[in-house]
Image (cartoon, rainbow, N blue to C red; front, side):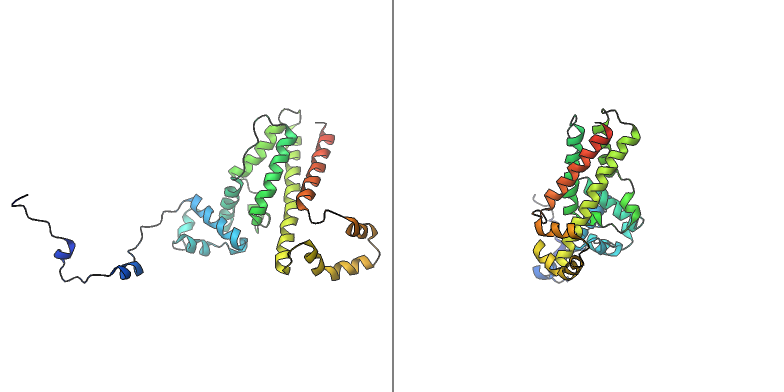
Length: 253
């Protein structure tokens, strides 16, 4: 508009300020806004570290570094390592999906067990937790899994104690069997073994001597005759079905 003064640009207001090149600005960016933390973000980053490097790599200092915050910032959300582990456990169990309503008890428990195995193989640290508290402390998603099992059993005439015994027995089988599978994978990686035969070769001195004593003839026959030694999926499902068969017979359901 005629007669109106043009507002000077920042450069005109500070004519003596040296111009910074694009490359200098890219090399030295302006400070980013203060990072906003949430418990979900903390758990996400901690799980990513554990998945990539193992549970021992997860420390409060390492977490702060990955989050780009001061070492003490995360303590606003978690009081220490146990709290952090509980957040991680809850986040991973949140990956599971509840059985469809009305699913028969055996199908519901079996499906959840298979999903739990797959979960542990994706996040092997779940069966290597260094804290007894984190291994058993209830979390929302952990309790939800128990709830699914008890809902599936609610109409078969069991007492509350029997329902929990069934759910806990299946869960204990899954944890124990999967922990063995994860440990085997870890040993294979440590030994540089690419398959079961390579792992057995690395363990040959121990096994050869034990079998040579003649004290374990049935186990020796297993080694010679077994066809499924390297089929953990079959081993898991066969054991799981045996557990479920036993539950059905014992509980009359």
